Image 1 (tube, rainbow, N blue to C red):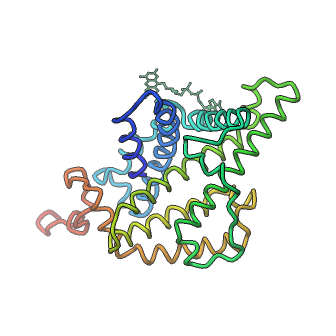
Image 2: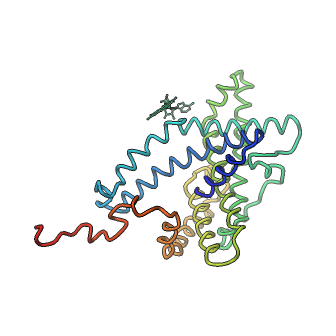
Image 3: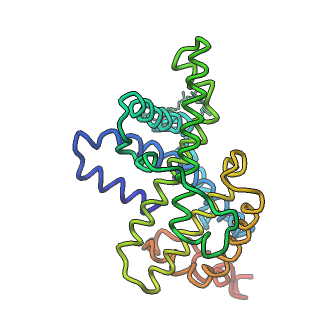
Length: 283
Ligand SMILES: Cc1cc2nc3c(=O)[nH]c(=O)nc-3n(C[C@H](O)[C@H](O)[C@H](O)COP(=O)(O)OP(=O)(O)OC[C@H]3O[C@@H](n4cnc5c(N)ncnc54)[C@H](O)[C@@H]3O)c2cc1C
């Protein structure tokens, strides 16, 4: 998500009038996805720290109450995600109408044949960026076609375009998530490609696989629409556990790589036993 945020910042800094649509769609998508993720992460941290996570000095509670509003202000997240789907469907309708290939918003893959997912998913396949890209593209393509068909059906029955979108909000949500997660994955892959082979690239590869596979595990649309079979979904789940073990030795370095100054951290980030001790004279 950091790579995706940096990518968006770079487009914004070098913005041209043509980039306005991309900036609007990506910032809507990333704002919603990141602020939801922020709250989930804080809750995970709170629980992972047990009772210590509740101590005021460890700041998790403060951060939760401070960041909770982000899913509402500057645009409600659900509404922003609907905007994303509206923008994508507009591209779809325009491409169909003009009989021209897709160009922009990362939809160029729609010009190629639909990706085929191997029936048996080995660890090597699951961790390859080609497979991860293929299945994320398949999800986006299929949901876009379904969403367009459903909206069109409602319009054929006499509903207005606006109401047809509202009636199809579940597909709109699924599609926006598919778009956002694919955009994030893409920025990780692009960053990875700038690195030469070595330990840094290896760890980044593990993080990328963790992101892709956790997304596949958690988004029920992979099973709902059959992008993954039940056996494949079980393989994905097992791979996540393996990735956790492999990432564990690197976890602290990965966290440190964000460069968060010590002054922003709480006692639990340091010697938490010392922080909870007192000398006998204080008893
Ligand atoms: C601390 C704070 C500071 C703010 N500062 C500013 C400011 O400086 N300037 C400013 O202009 N505004 C500001 N706002 C307002 C903010 O932009 C709105 O609160 C925000 O856009 C959400 O609108 P709402 O409160 O009307 O909620 P609603 O839009 O009514 O949302 C309530 C619920 O309904 C759901 N919902 C709404 N529409 C749909 C839909 N179409 N489909 C599905 N679900 C839907 C939402 O997901 C949400 O769960 C601020 C708000 C807060 C809380």
